[in-house]
Amino acid sequence: MSEEELDPVIHAPARLRIVVTLAALPEGDNLSFTRLQDLIGLTPGNLITHLRKLEDAGYVRMQKSGSGVNATTSVSLTSEGRGALDRYTVVLRGLLDQAAATQPN
Amino acid sequence: MNEDVGTKNGAGLDDTADMDARDAAAIMQDAGNRARRELRVNTQAIYACAGVAWLLGYGGMWLSVRGQRPYQGPTPAAAFIQVVLIGLAAAITASVVGRATSGVGGFSAVQRRVSILALVIGIVAVLVLEAAIDHAGASRSIVFGVFQAAAPVLVTGVVYVATSASRLNWPALGLGLWLIAVAAGGAFAGPVGVWGVIAVAGGIGFLLIAALRPAANR
Image (tube, rainbow over all chains, first blue to last red; front, side):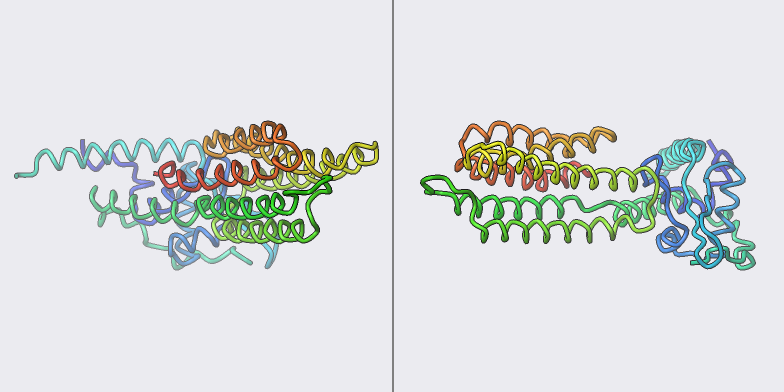
């Protein structure tokens, strides 16, 4: 097992935080862009960049409501995103177990 | 708030090279803990607060009817105290829920609104039914004793069961079933005893769930 097996879309600190944060919500729920920003601690520009990468991969869904200054965006993890995070976690656990097994006592 | 922001400052953040498996695990743990801490409603505080309000409110009603011959029903002072306690518990619940669920939309938000609406409609229906039973000539011990004490508890229990069943929230489901049992069983204690039974059994039910909640969250 090697680090190349980790999904490159998720395997970036900011995107990993985003996906893990959204996965903490029950299925069917979404989070406003501003609350997500508070939880992740990124600038709006950074956050939107990472969200678009995740959206392009089909891992998150962004929905905009309202217009102008009242526009709000909500973000949710798709079932593909949940599945990708599960697979990422499995590979990560394997890598950590492998590293622990090869570590000298 | 306009969130349609520029993306120029997000360029060049594809920083996978700096993160190994250990870093990723640490990030996952940190982000997961923070999300759970901030987004999870502190139901322990809500149940504890409701338990105390329930115990004092129903306990006060029981003290006000104890020894009445013939039975007249709870005094206005006891009813006022109960309304104030319910108001306080509702305000604390709204504050705790509002803090955790700010910015959270979707199924949970809709479910919360529907549950509150069902509870309000249920309690209003109980009050209307109470007036109808009184109008039909039922005795004060039935209208302002057994029915007034037990019916709102039955409605609360049914709303708890219906709400918790959709997401299999076992502690809330258990509490709802317990409240239904307390309302139905407590009615056999008569117009005076029903207030005491509901005060103790209902209050303990809420406090027990509050005490068990941290274990359920682990």
